[in-house]
Amino acid sequence: MKSAGAPLHTRGHYGFAAVWLLLALLAVSGCLPSSCSRTESRALFPSDSLSRSIAAEIAVDTLSLLWSSRGPDDAPFEYPRTVLFDGEGNIWVSDAESNRLKRLSNAGNTISDLSDERFSYPYLAGISGDTTFIFSPGRSAVLRILAGSVEEVAETPKTARSGLLQYAQVHRGKIFLKLLGDDFTGYVTDLSDDRTRRVRTELPGPSWRWAGGLRVWGDTLLSLRGYRPVVDLILPDGGRDSLLLRGFDSPMLARSRLFAFGKVTKAPLLTSSAYPFEKRLYVLNMRPGWLRVDVYNRAGQLVHVLTQRDPAFDRSFYPIDLAVRRSAPNTIQIAVAVVEPEPRVDLYSWDEAP
Image 1 (cartoon, rainbow, N blue to C red):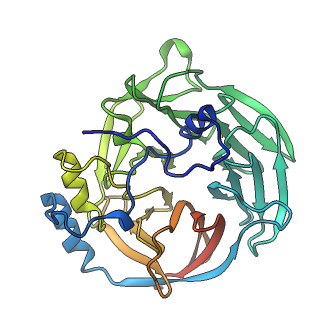
Image 2: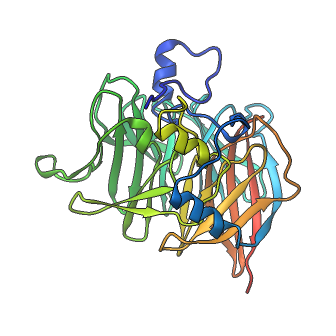
């Protein structure tokens, strides 16, 4: 199997070194649903065929778009890579191209726009109370922002390895790092552990297989995968378990099978992000033109399918991240970062059945 090494999206003015550094934030390249050939075999793995039948039984709920923002007029979004809600419902957005951190109100207005020389392709790693944590892979550092002040809290491993992918998550004082590359065995580790007894969970094989961010769900660390409907559970002793997302359906599942047998050269990107909230996992299910969010319970079973109103085909549509909060007893808000066809952040609302 072949793993391509270029990012899914780069701007023309990036130099060669910067392009590879941007890979630290983006998934390895693959193909999106809009690129699927109609002449390819439509055969599925048995598990994918079962998932498709489960998905067919789930009613689809419609999301309401509250607003869409391209950022402030004088400094619009260029590549809004990650989004997170804070405790007040404001939306933090890291822009990986402008190296800025913006905070939007729940109404979509810009509250702050922060720039710092230590922001190098910034990646939101977590929010705790009034403190926001930023992973800066270009500077090999985890930073925190408190009352507008930026300070470094930890260094991450410095490496010149090729095809590097890096993800970080900060939770309850612990800093988790996921490091993947073409020429070494990838791993997940807790940087806050004593270096002499640091536990590693190895992720062997090609980096594309494990590409995806880190999340914390209750007391469990999740390692996401973009190219298969599987979430890895990282255990405290360094072990790893896997949670199969039963009910995940995608127009690219057939291509996944073809890729596994070497019939096509690019792995299909099934999901660009997922977000655990309360007892559910919200998964961005890539579609050629419209937003779809699948909702799973703790056992990995599909329980809800959410989609935007009036979905339409758009080959360039690419949502890259999402965050979830409860805004009322029966109302969920979902913030989505979109990089194509124009960089923006959308806020949706979903009214759950009482």
